[in-house]
Length: 120
Image (cartoon, rainbow, N blue to C red; front, side, top):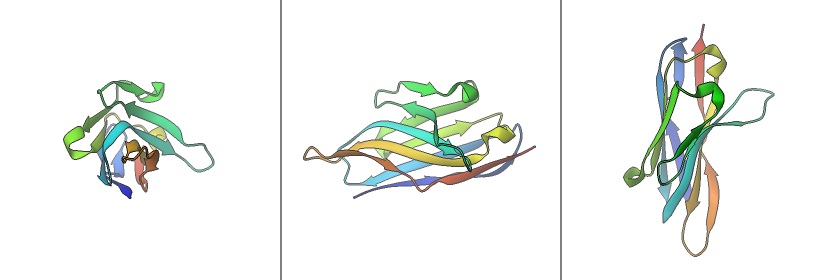
């Protein structure tokens, strides 16, 4: 069994910063890509940023230059540093990880979601 536990969401004024964390625990042999998604009511969940096990990262255009994704492989943790936040960044943010648990068992896992609210 694998769990992803997120933390770091909250309420911030426009222009402010927040840092999200997501720690994976349980039956983990290795973690491939880790990423952050976000979702607002009535809209599909969208990929915000992803980082490979080798450290290569990609971002959705709307957050480039403002958000930074990073990971600590020793801690099985991924972070999302969010700067210059805008009201349109308001959403529930979900952590995602592609995890290999051994015996050819590999699947994606999701965190429970953390609310980020940016006030204007």
